[in-house]
Amino acid sequence: MKETERVQSGHNGSSLYDCTASMVIYRNPPAVIRQAAESFLDTDCSVRLTVVDNSPADDLRTAFDSLPISYHHSGENVGYGRGHNWAIFSAEPSRYHLVLNPDIRIMPGTIRSLVQFMEGHPDAGMVCPRVLNEDGSDQYLNKRYPSVMDFFLRRFMPPALKPLFRKRLERYEMRDVGYDDVCDVEVMTGAFMLCRTDILKKLAGFDPRYFLYFEDYDLSRKFQEHGFRTLYYPKSAVIHFWTRGSHRHIRMTMIFIVNMCRYFRKWGWKWR
Image 1 (cartoon, rainbow, N blue to C red):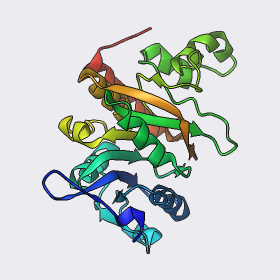
Image 2: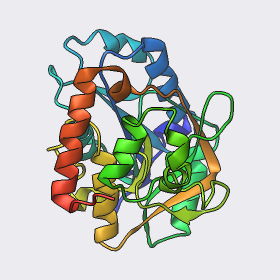
Image 3: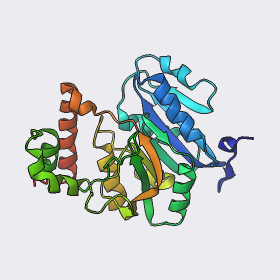
Image 4: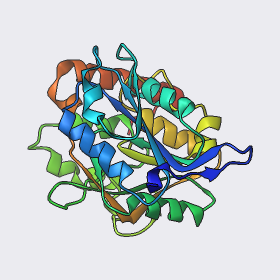
């Protein structure tokens, strides 16, 4: 029997997976989402993946042919957070739940390594691994709590002027701390968040008011507000085939701005 199908017994006698995962898709390239699914399933842990398809039609269902996953077609674009919430509360019982982007490839051994790390850190509610570009270089996705000025500098400042604020921008991305050691991260990347399932459900998952963007900022703060650390573990790695939708399209930029305002209204405005 494949390890992905072997599960432990839960406290009430139900099956208990080491790790469930949710992946929300919307008109993604079939080869990319299949690669993400296969890389998650290729592990010696007991795992189960739920795919929530927000696309208008269920054409992407065939991308997962022969894979042991649960597929749900929502019939409308309900948003990133709502899609993951459906999977989080519909998935089989598990010790950990992974929020997984469809443009991620998980390196062999990563799931096992992160689960073992969490077992050794009971005060941690969430962990993320090292996130790499295709060429093996780091993506600087660990963040400190943002200010409005941070977002302005990153997204609207002319490139010629950005060097004037290099130290500030690098500090926001925690480059002063570095990416070689375990550390607490104030804002965890939503591309790959491994959470304790019971805590994630207790906190009601993602705030559904965020249609897209800032769900990860918000969820990180909810875990911390309830006394759980959000940690970075660099000995495990994933590859992120990253595209910046909010930089390319006016509509996505507007969604970003709306959700940025929603975030600051909830957690307090920080201008500088």
